[in-house]
Image (tube, rainbow, N blue to C red):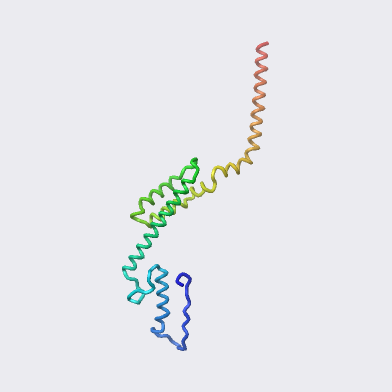
Length: 176
């Protein structure tokens, strides 16, 4: 199995191996290596494992297609993520710039476009906005600030009463 490695047991009574003896184990090794690198067939027509230029071109096309697909799905996920944000939150300018650059570069440089889309999706400011929305902040600080607010409002109310009484006394003194 190319992705997990392999063992080739070669049972022989010889003390030294010839090139002919090693063709089969190395043939398997080359086939696994080619498959691991992404080439379609295990062996090519030359039989030496060296890829043809057509195979390299096909591999490049596959990688470009994969990058474009990944970029499109990441940008779609980012769009859905931004749409799910409350309207009170602003998208960071860095995220919107990366998004715009990724879209602009998608046709000319798919590898750069993929990188930019992933940077935008995993931006630390955007992630922190998602994990710490305003409702959570209120839920954390309200139990701490509510007793203080009640005390301050009570003191303001008492101060207003005292001032009203002073005004009433002053108006009575002026009337007398």
